[in-house]
Length: 501
Image (tube, rainbow, N blue to C red; front, side):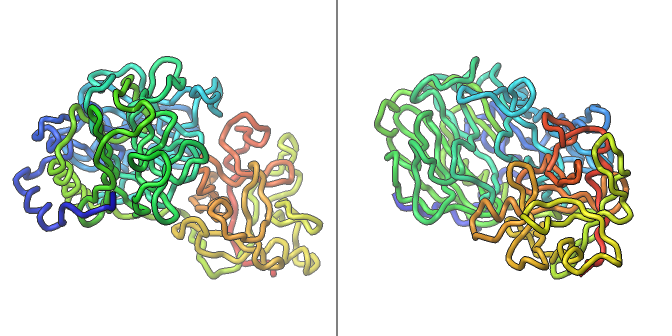
């Protein structure tokens, strides 16, 4: 059905006043649909919660740190994370359940569609610093999900099973999505994590049209949909339903289901109310009686029972009024300004064990003169013009995220540094979403204390790293030779200076 606005911001705030300082899960409890799993790395979801929000592990020594709210019911203490993770990388290892049911999310094992990319077949973990935001004016960190990143809990308590009613919501980045399966949060299979057939899942999905068994709506996407296993639905039909593109930077997404009834709702998490995108009977094809199993993937809020529309409206009003999400800087360290023309000097020591024979004093990131590969080359004041130009880059606002940057080749205008199969090359801008994301990088404070380290925006566990004369996006330890732990901080740090051209 066409979307319709069922709650204005003004009426929502008036209604919210009766809840005083209540958090989202306090509001759900008032409606007799209590939270049975509640996850957030940015804030407490109950007014009196002051327990664990999430845990991070740093790469330098593999030690861990738990992050809690600054105060009961408050925003996460990002300062604890910043101090702990200084001069190294940190991953989010646990996202704690605030509901008291102990449904904590941890690194997900590979699903039935194939093993995950991490050692042992596990999915990757999210980089702790890759989704900086402010919550009510205070710095916090969300969870940046890239392909092959996943969190899961199979041994759950009080989560809906079979055809029991439930609701769920999450605040998501409507600008970060893809057209594949599946960016899910919600109720999934347990045990072997395999496809047990239609109706064994009930989840929120934000994304484009899945190439197989996918629903879609109006515009180019993304759409708020539901993955019910072997079908991603935007409404009662498997294919097209009249649902608008929902791409707010902070998007409230809601799904709920009970016997032969389900609904999709959403809105801007920064302002306004909720729209109803679908409310009605279950899809055909055996989805009348659900066989939910009670596992959990990703993170957000799960409730017991089918929440009333007005309760969800009050939750939305709480998000708008009390969370007040805004974006925060994706970069740190020495500024790399759009509009400037720069060269990127390596700071590697020249270790022959890593195959890096050039000294940092005159080695620069360049493109090969005979192909598109990004390499390191020796350049001095006496080098020829072609060589100097190959190491010169015009900085632009990020093609995939304007909070970061992209590097355009000075001597091959219209071509940008991008990653492809982990290697870097220059490639012409074809205007695609994939190209723009692959060509976007976020400078950070140099890992070795010099200049900048340059993080891939689309794969934020990976930094630009020189290895054996070539340049890659590399993890700090991993299965590839260029992920070598030894020398990582030096190899992934660069002095950004005036261009040679």
